[in-house]
Length: 117
Image (tube, rainbow, N blue to C red; front, top):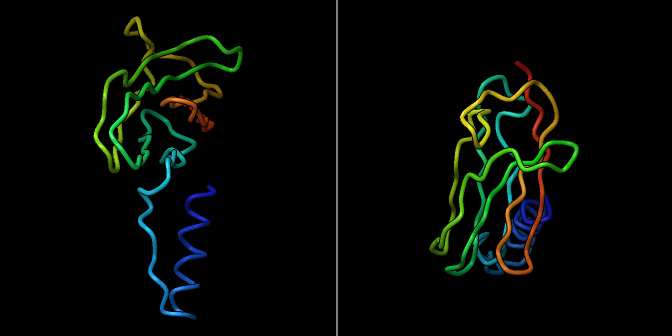
């Protein structure tokens, strides 16, 4: 949310002052999953300013790990992964609220996912 708002603010500033617009990838950003709410799958996207180790995990409302979607080194730029509502054992999860958390160094934001089966 903050990065999107910053990008909009810079765009408006650019129109008023002809200032340069910084790259969105100059910030770590975790975008809102789309679609959300979802019925079968949702796309989780993020951007990072430099190469780094990344871990993207899904948790239930009790804080239990449901699935690890990414656990590797990624290059700078925008990335995305689709979560298909499957847990780490290959089972479909039930309808409910889940949280996508991405971690890279000290950066560890979360986004809520509503799954409606």
